[in-house]
Length: 175
Image (cartoon, rainbow, N blue to C red):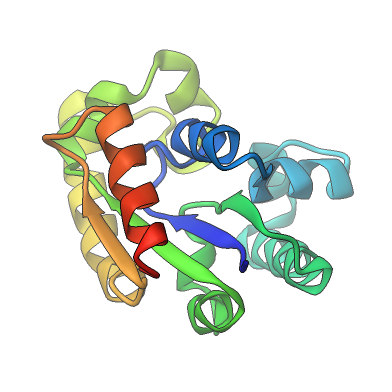
């Protein structure tokens, strides 16, 4: 079996759904943001803030290469911007299966707790209206990358359990 990479915008549920999928499949769960933090010895927000986005994206790519080289069958939650940098999306598609968890900006805004907003450097200081407007623009720019996924799941009208069941069914069918 190949790794299952979950892609999508920040706050769409990649980590939450990834843990549930991994549990159901009986495999490891890997969070690329957590690995970046472990390798860098700093939070994603701090790497982003103090060393810049380019440095953060390079650290993300090293982690992605590490995950792929280990070649485990695992569920991998990726950072929201990881698929948009260089050839990361084609690389993930070649190494495993990719699933795009698509949600509307409004639903993601509702899902994000105050802590979730604070820990994401690009969302700090935005009110609700500004947040949705920012996400609409940012998501439109990222959509061409996310849309390269082997499976796209529109999550807005589905519960987390329904999303998990949908992905498991498609995995069984070979995606």
